[in-house]
Image (cartoon, rainbow, N blue to C red; front, top):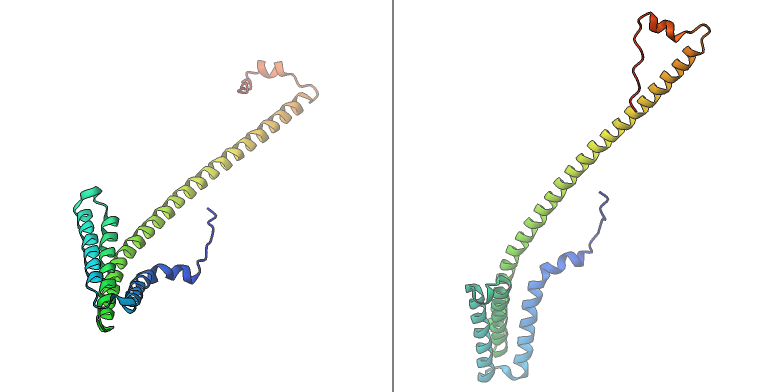
Length: 199
């Protein structure tokens, strides 16, 4: 019932939202560094990036088609790798900055679009779990309250029974102590006997 209250720092809360932008920006920066170090118009470097990007896309297609277990996370990772390699290849090979920036904007938009879908799914799952937990807590709290009332009632009945037994014993003792009390006279008069106490 006592929940621990955790206050997350704003950096912790915003880090997952910034991750797609940071990833595509990092790929763009590394591609431009590669461009400055000799990748510009290098046919071998361009061919290498084409082969790597195509290989990653093929692996993603096979994973999406169900080969190798059909893991959706594996397929998404392979397609993201393919896109990252293609962006890095263009950023490294291109003359100016306009084409790499255009591809960076496109890649960032696509990445945020895909990530938003997963964020919505995670949010729905978290809300559903929270609702189930709340309902379960309420059910358990209701059962606890009912059991507490039942136990209190049983304790009160036991106390009343003890008080009644004490009062009855005191009355019998007081009646027996009266002068001239004859229990046989009561029996002869036809008064019913006291019921035996259940042991």
